[in-house]
Amino acid sequence: MFLPLNIIADIPQVVLIILLGIVLPLAMILGAFYLIKLFLRYGLSPVTGRATAFIANRYLFSRTHRNAINIITFVAVLGITYVTAALITVLAIFNGFQDLVENMYTAFDPDVRVVASRGKTFEDDAELRQRILSVDGVEFMSPTVQDKAMLTYFDKQYMVEVKGVKMDYLELNPLDSLVYEGDFGFKTEGGYPMAVLGGTVAYYINARISDRITPMELWAAGDVKKALSNPLEAAKSRKLFTAGYFKVQMEYDTRYILADFEMVRELFSMENKISSYDIRIGDFGEADRVKQDIQRALGPEYKVETWYDMHETLFSVMKNEKLVAYLILTLMLIIAAVNVVGSLSMIIVEKTRDIAILKSMGASKRMVRRIFLLESLLVGGIGGIAGMASAWVIGYLHETYGLVPMAGGETFTSGIEFFPHEMWASDFAIIFCTIFLLSLIAGLYPSKKAADTKIVVSLRK
Image (spheres, one colour):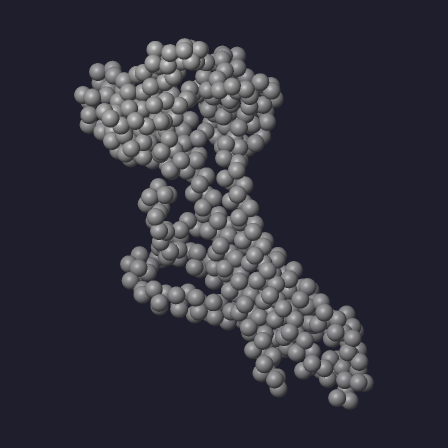
């Protein structure tokens, strides 16, 4: 059962911050505390031994002469909770942006592309096509031609990247779904050529879909040798009308126009040459394997790229940013873990006589060490579970109802109204392992100190 959207929207922002930033984490800490208590009683005993689990359970937020011990322990749990929630939330936002960017680029770019190793064009050969189509995983392929040209309309001029595709290209990439006004087509009813313009390109030259009287004009340099001697004579042009506007993201909207394959090829004097073979594959996750198989089939004269290779710098930067964010917030976790060392050290001081009595009754150093190591893991476990649960609840609410709007979303991210957010199970697993490791390290020194307690000296105190 889902809450209506207006319930979330009508909650005042201050109240929402208090509920999600204070009440929710505290409730999760309380829930995690009782969950850990139950797990100690029924789950951990076979692993750690009944006595070890029982004593660790008693020491966890136990009544002491010094209330400062429980306060420090609670502060450690609270710190781990907030840092864990922040870490998962930040990583989820990075995941959301990565997924958003991938969807933007793959909406326009093919899964795999074959281009020439040298130069901008290569021969369109039937044998070459067959070698590509014979590779396992390749489902569809279409040739494209692409180059720069000057687009003019009345007194407006704008440099564009012209991509010539066939109508069957829609089987490879549904470019028609990107058209937000007009139609996806390259010829009018009268047979006149048309083009689909990026929304920003159309804005700069003031193109109008309704205008079927005055065409735009596309200018190409033509033959290079002639252009050097007489640029005006060498230049070629084609008149065309506006079929529609498409919108992907700024990089494409400001550069590209889509036009008929044969018209563009003739405009750029490519004859039997093409710019690339764009390929659709069956399994998106096998792009690298398909790329390698195609590369082996074609040889070094051709360069095979996946959608990731086409934008490798961008995705590398995003991955590095995510890693840096993880490392920075892990440092904050380390600082929170220092409080665990402090609280355990104070518990050891408080329970010195208890430890001495345990040892006099036959408890080994190993058992005492395990009690306080377990105590450290419990503190980290409560904070980690509470933090991950809080982050999941906040993430679910944001993904369902939208809690944080993104300024400029309509302009820069194709109408994305709220911050993209996507929680990955792998992030939860990595963060859980990080908390476990830090808690274990934090408990090493106090547990060793407890294990080294002298029975006679401690009982005399």
